[in-house]
Amino acid sequence: MLILTRKKDESIVIDDKIEIKIISLDENKVKLGISAPKDIEIHRKEIYLEIQEENKKAAIGNLNLEGLGQFFKK
Amino acid sequence: MILTTKHFGEIEIDEEKIIAFEEGILGFEDIKKYTVIVNPDKDVPFHWLQALEYPELAFVITNPFVFKKDYDFEIPEKVIEQLKIEKEEDIMIFSIAVVPEDMKKMTINLRGPLILNIKNKKGRQIVLDTEKYSLKHYIFEEAATENIG
Image (tube, rainbow over all chains, first blue to last red; front, side):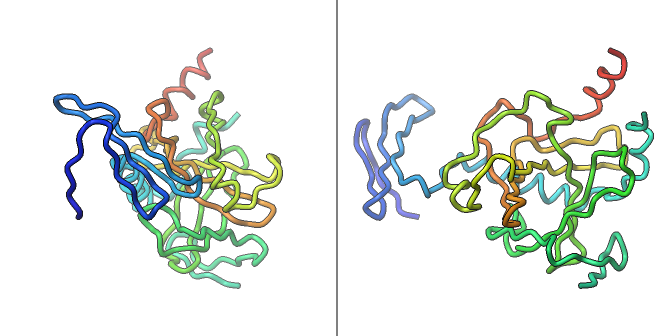
């Protein structure tokens, strides 16, 4: 992983098309501004990981839905 | 084609009904082909998304709007291009459900909806970067209140 130190208002440019700027700094958080082409997806990492984990739980979950009928019968 | 699945035994797959997930599903990026197995019980709004390359893998899916009527989000332009979506009518949205032993504690993932273009059979999971919708939305609390009301 490349480690760089930036001050407030300084930026990093990636691949000539993505820019990450430090908008503000706080004691324990930093606000980042990101410019990137529309075809680049940007997400908070933990959200990605959460969804991966949830998908995995779904895959090993109960696939037998017979018991559900009783909740939906009209 | 015939697929020997772990959960449904041998099933006949209609080639026309194979959905291509070019990027796979998060956590299962290598698996790109799925088919929807519709629940034979018409009263139950849950179906299965069965993986083709890996017959052991299937997900329980449902229409999230049945459980969250005001579910609303924007499909990113990148996704519209990727799935070549032309009309809103071609879109089908599903949520993956996690079904524990106690079925009443079942949840659906509203943060990672599956977007399907039924016209060209392309699909993908998108990530909603918002606290507004839950990763684990309990469906039965709502169903219970609806029955009472």
